[in-house]
Amino acid sequence: MEDVFIHEVGLRDGLQMESKIVPTEIKIQWVEILFDSGIDIIQLGSFVNPTKVPQMADTEKLFEYFSKPGKKPDNIVFSALVLNEKGLERGLACGVDMFCMGVSASETHSMKNTGMTIEEARKRIITMAKQALSAGKKVQVSVQSAFGCGYEGPVSEEKVISIVKEYIDAGLKNISLADTAGMGKPNQVKRIFDKIKELDDTVVLACHFHNTYGMGLANSSIALSCGVKYFESAFAGLGGCPFTKSPVGNISTESLVQLLQAKGIKKKFDMEKIIGISRIVKFYFNK
Image 1 (tube, one colour):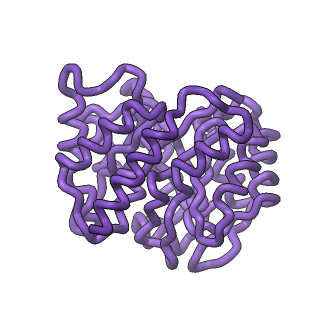
Image 2 (cartoon, helix red, strand yellow):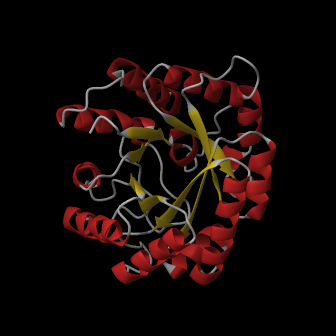
Image 3 (cartoon, helix red, strand yellow):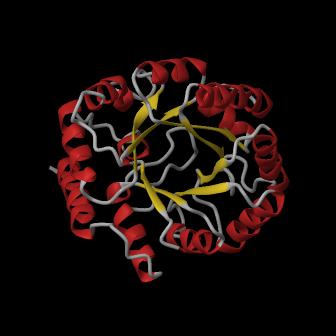
């Protein structure tokens, strides 16, 4: 159980719903605090249209800054979200370590988020993922709205599994399930992750839970028992998808660390540093 990793998405998912734009130099300061927290992966941003998500307009600048000698510890992985080929091209040009990309299990969410049908997104994302792997990059593919959709309600588990199976058949085995609308329930989380393991027990599993109905930590606990290794969270519990019906924050990184420590995972995470960055972020948005 010590082989568990936290993927901090506060700088991307956490900020994308905030109207107050965070200057690049402030983001850099927050990242540097995270370096000493024991966090494994930091998502610096997303390569999306800045007119639609203005908080992400400086994503290239962040990657370019931290690509300079001495600016990034060797043990830290920097990730970014990409939605299409243009985003992948931008990410490859500025030094992204790990690309995150996915397909929604909800037709409505897929169209609102990417302008693509599920079928079109499947084909394009798998091609993009293979391209990124060929370039020597880490890749995590996801199923978004995997546990329900704010627009459509319940999502077919068979649809989720069919997307996962396509990933596996394409040789993509770092797979995340994202509860974009925060509708997941523990028994549902267990059922779907167990089905994935039945398909292929060599898959590396990740999860991304929102806290719409207060179930994020309960779902994380179940995911841990299912063998999930990568947990995405946001400092101060910020976040929410701008293209879902009722965007609500992610599970907070500080609460996730408390859960992991209660489960006996004591390694490396510096709770003082993690609570400290959350307080700084909360103060910034409340002042």
